[in-house]
Image (cartoon, rainbow, N blue to C red; front, side, top):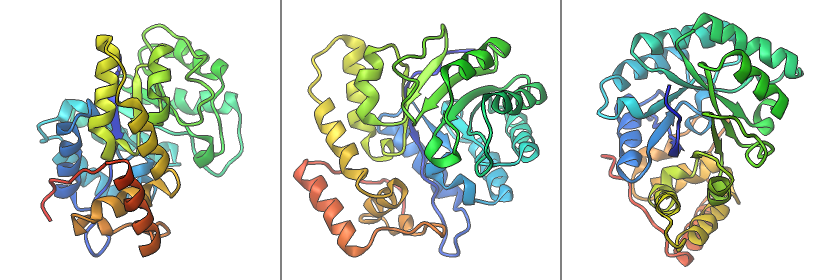
Length: 294
């Protein structure tokens, strides 16, 4: 087991006009953001519309992702409420030698720490050679991890529970576990997190900010003066004025129409919102171009 550290994007999923998953372009996008500075990418996180994509399409992508030049740099999200389907998808991924998984507790139902420990215990027992990053995002699933819950899971499964993506931001300042990765879910928390012992970030907007985020990370590691962090945070704050998935697809679609397709009930930004977003980013002297073939 190796500690997960660095800049990770919750990678976008690219869709065909009929709203099926475009496997080739989704993988090309993930490879592109790694080329632009990310240490890796989380496939089928919430930003990748994982909860809306059929399992059959996820499996089809995994089979092709196994051939990617960056195969070792991917974290596989499950995006499923069902325990059984989560385990089955992980078994497929393990058969293709993917080992790292990002897993959120089920949405909709109300439960507490005891039930969450039971949920992850079932997964760890079923897939004993998996490495699991807990996904702490109360806004999406209705549950917020406590420090005590994480500590109990790590104590019970030290080889399986290897990190947490903290998008509720109640853990990254106070959770201290040896050889355990804490990764906030926002660029605005990157520098502070690193100063407090965090391992890096996993974020939606690193699809666009990979170069800036990597510069902040590398400057911290090398003890250099931080000259990029303010701009990085300002770009993140600009995207946060909108739904992040909608904003990112809209941003990339300016140069590549492949990004315009998005699964309902999500949608791209209105023309007015798109103009506002792009104007605000121009004021920050921020731009990036997708190398994904149109």
